[in-house]
Length: 197
Image (cartoon, rainbow, N blue to C red; front, top):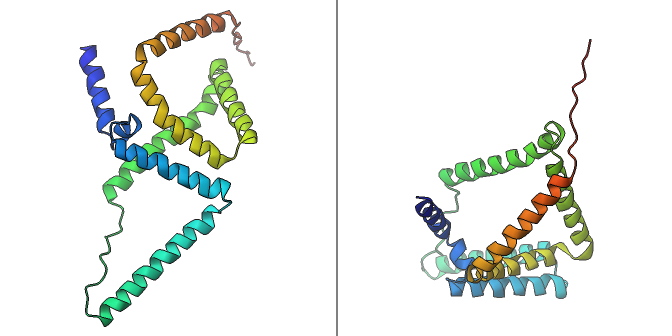
């Protein structure tokens, strides 16, 4: 039974927007396009010194000018107008996205209460470590370079994990056991309730 549940969850992951196929290089064309375009954007913005805001505004200016000239020439030459898609966000998509964002925001907002009210020291250490790591990495590299590294890792780590899953799972389980043994040795504070009269 557990095997069918895991296979159904993995198949739902593979069906979700084709992201898994892209990250696991099953859709080679899409993965190559993602890799090449992210490398081109990184080079354009990071190495060539181009600014993102000016790039976006220049591309939009070019598109608007092309559409305007196409529409004017079409009326002068008795040609059809340029095909322009209906640019609306479907209500179902907006509601689903808002629900998912709300769940994520509520989870993030529950972390401080978990630290303060529940007095969870492990959660405090986790949050502190993640924030420190983000701060440290932010001082070392540019945020655009960080996004580029994340894209490269997302294209390489799933493939490596899929090929060497057994070895990685063994190492992660032994590491997790060592961390649990170390965390058991850390004394936990005993909460004493104060009596108010």
